[in-house]
Length: 456
Image (cartoon, rainbow, N blue to C red):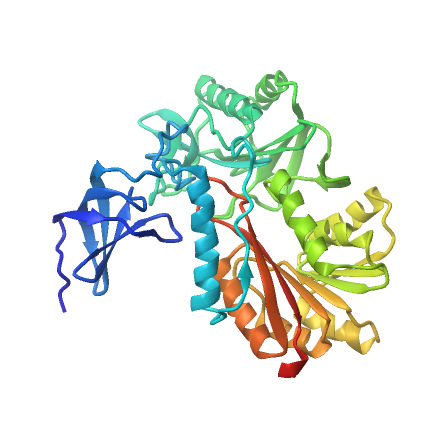
């Protein structure tokens, strides 16, 4: 069955919503059209670019009557750069959209209607907030480009500054680009699998200390000493690494790191807790909002000092350390070996002795702990975007902790998992969205669940 539109059609549309990819949503005779460049409240002309059975994709070609929530972007690259989606939308409106996105997922996917969903907690100043940058390196017509991929392509948008990164990053990218141009160092070409430099990664601590990681296709880095000398002129740069990634993969970092200069690691903080950061360490990219998120998780746990807590998918132990002050004992479980090593180091760094970190799958380790007589009074889970393994959800239900706190970066998989827990003995009390990623459609949530004995 053919829809009511064809490729090349130009239509008058009213944008009524946004998708979780940041596309405007319009309707023609009940037929859905996703519009790149459209914001809720816009009246615009959209050109149809692709048609499917149940929807079409289009691009805004003229904004006839802009939404009252539109603003002039402070980013000069936003029209091409695929890094952010919401630079033309008022920040308060972004927070409202993220709240509604969470609410929609909880109700539509989770089938839960009586859950308290708080307004999304935003930032006072939603700029220059990231402590980690990952930049693609490309080449076009003999010119080096360093930046982010263009939307829906593998073409690198060359940038001189990024308003969600610290200013030190702008200096680093300029130096690397000048070095590559001066010494004719080639960018990696994915199609030909040739070239030297693939990516530039930066990591910055709260005190300004910065680590620079040059990702290369081999250990050979031409004019390496000249690059190191130039980067050292940036006073914040205290550590420089070369990371080797020979694989044809979208994964940025390879497994081998060679220290070129300075400190082995930098030390960052969340609240009063210190964390070692090495090239491959996982660490939340927005330290201000991470503190907000973790304090809310601690509030929901409502610890009195006598509890045993399981922190499942614990990563490098950030939440575990927050919990440790208020709990009797904490067991952190994580499948990634390097993360467990970092977690153990971080516990020593903070002189915390009531945490045990265990390497393995959470859905396998938690039952073993239970068999050993170690029962969790309360559980925290912070899974990847795909959500919790169903076996882990089954295990949580068997353990019967009085409280579960679920930290999530994906409202859809969060809602799916909450539905399971709701159907198996837990009541979802409250969800608190936190804006960890201003100017994007991403939102983090922390959710409180308590045992519902009526459902057992």
